[in-house]
Structure formats: structure tokens, C-alpha cells
Length: 258
Image (cartoon, rainbow, N blue to C red; front, side, top):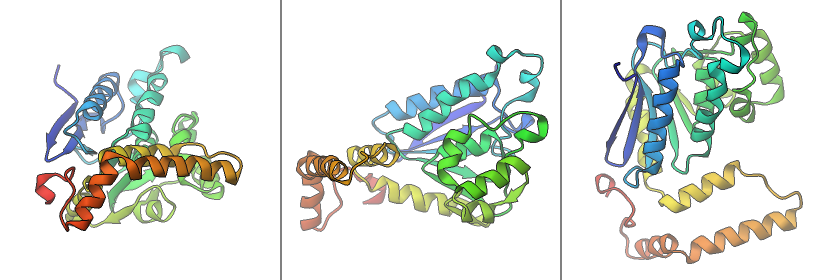
């Protein structure tokens, strides 16, 4: 059976490519399994600093594979495995960048929302189409709702309306929408910046961003002070300050960026 998801690593960037254009990169059982495996491999690889989710074909991801979902009972639905993928992306200690050269629907939007950075061509379109086929955008709401305000979420989840990349950027689903001939350069701009960050500091910052803050300001400051002091005194913090004083790049910066 041909692989539907590919992993390539170069210059600290792990590129995971969805390659199932015959069904618009729908989340079939095989694609889900391979995507999870490649995400795990990239996260575990010390040589990887940033993960990019790419795709072949005209569509980034059309959501769940509806052919597999038909005639299956609730316990055998592929959507049951989907939260683990979204959580892998959301909690990855390495930043994840979504590169969309085409539309995303339903679960595909959930994947883009789970990524730290999402860049799309300005011709891409998006929709939470679940209600129009009689299902609920429940699982993807976990990653999508933190990106939207309540008014936008109610409108787009309830209407299933298709919206363009410009609006997706305006409402927080995307970081930027660019012309097709600028997509590669825009993704590289982000990956280059992300690769400059110290690995442990980046992981701790991601954990801080997605974690729950204490209810009181005093407790929040105490927790953040402990985190800050730990990294100021840590190996990376000391190396970063030495590099700044010596006007050089820190040791963790990939050679291609020095």
C-alpha cells in the first residue's frame, strides 16, 4: 500500500506532507495512522526544530473520510481517533506551521487551527460544513474556538458558510493569506524565525501559552517568575546572553541561519 503521508527532514525543518489528492486529503484510517506516526517521529527527533504540515493536490484537507464513515456505528467512527492528532499538534513542544495551498473543510480547519502558525494562499476557502451534512463540529471546536470570538464561532459553525482566506486571517484562523507565488517564501519567513528560538525555551513557551493560568494575579506572577528565573539561569539562557554579548548567533541556531 502506497504511503499517504510523507516525512522529510532538512536543515532542522520536518516537512510532513499529506499526499492523498484522490480524496482531497480526507482523514482516512490510513492517513490518520501515518500522520500520527510521522508527527511522533518529528517530535522525537532532536534534529527537528520546526514542523511544517504541507500537502499535495488542490485541497489541504477535506475533513473526515465520509466513505469510511458511512454505515459505521458511533464506536467505529474514525473521528474517535482524531482528537489524538489534534492534541499532538496543539501540545507539540516544537512549533508547527500549517501550509495551505488550497481549501480546508471541517477537520482540515481543525488541523490548521491546532497549529501554532497557519499560512494560506489568498484563494483558499474554509467552511465548518458539518451541520450541512447532519453532524456537529464537536471535536474540532477544541482547537478552533480558542482562535475565534463567540460571535464569529456562532455564525460560522451554525451557517456552514464558506469564507475566504482573507477573512480567515482577520478572525484568527490564519496568521497570513498571501498570493500563491508568495506562499513558500512566507512559510520560510516563519520557519526561519522559529528556528532562531532555543529548543527548551520554545517548548516551555508553548506550554505556557496553552496552559491554564492560576485564578489570582499573585499566583500567576509567582508561577511565571519561577519559570522565568529557571530559564534565565539555565544553559540556554546563559548561552543566549553570552552570544548576545559576543555579537554571534547562539549555539542552537541551525548552521543555515548563521
